[in-house]
Length: 331
Image 1: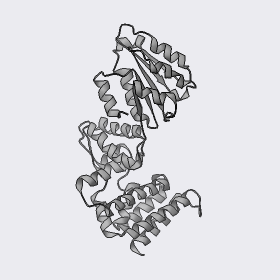
Image 2: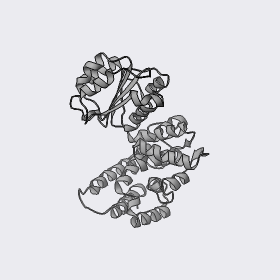
Image 3: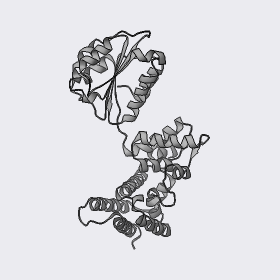
Image 4: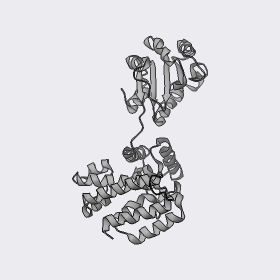
């Protein structure tokens, strides 16, 4: 199965397959490929007659086959795109066409948000005649590296702290991340290095009181700043929802675990998202500290969803940070 980059490179070289099947839960890469099929293969004057878009909910398999069997008009080829294919009841009936596709048509089957049943006819027949691409959702710990890579494509250097901040704040919605970074690039066209200040200015993550700094503030024993942050979050509970707080702490503790079981190496650390403050914290706290901290997070994950004592987020945050301080510093 080809990767997104391989497929895009083939398309840019005008090396076309007769059939493409695009499925998976991550729409970002599917949309990029669809854009190429819609905008880059046919000339603008060719599209009226040779670009056909159908929708699974409104079409039957025969409609797709009839469109794909047409001959191109005043162009070398036709492009037929079936969108929302997951809503077509008789989708597997396209297997007959795929076995013998038209040499002058590019058929694109878009099956987003869901992977095709691997036992079905299409999942088996498309790879034999064309290209089958599954767009997988990135895992949370893979997002920072993706953010840095996206920045490189734009000529924008994004450091590990900034990449991690964006991934925690924006989640693993790649299109949302791309949109926010595009917004920064539009407002700062000469920008070469993304800083926390830019994130604060254009995306709205505060540097002084942002939840992503909370673990580091606790692990470096900055009790005065911690007190200010807890006071701020108590007055502004939407700035630190417990789900985000707990997820941020889990991510930080995971980095500490990696520090215990790997030697400091600049290149390897960057790939794992480990930075100097993680290495420093790992030197000051033992594995039992980390085990007990993770157990505490599990306890408050249950409290957050109403298992055990039920509190609001502000009360839970105060209680959790207080207990975490006791685990780390014994007071």
